[in-house]
Length: 89
Figure (cartoon, helix red, strand yellow):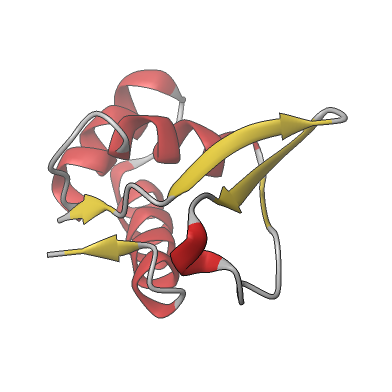
């Protein structure tokens, strides 16, 4: 899975937000706010192909969290990416 290149993570007044870039996103009607962990996962996903497993491994390396919680949270994050059509196979 990969993030669509037409969206970027930006710091806007101290808030981490995903914004649309390009003409194909003119009708984008909301800004997606990410917390610190969500922004970390986004930056990891920006590196290229990713999966729940690869993002979970990155999260476990960065934060003190148990594997079950990390897996659940990453799966939820990836599901939201898919729901908002921010990622593609």
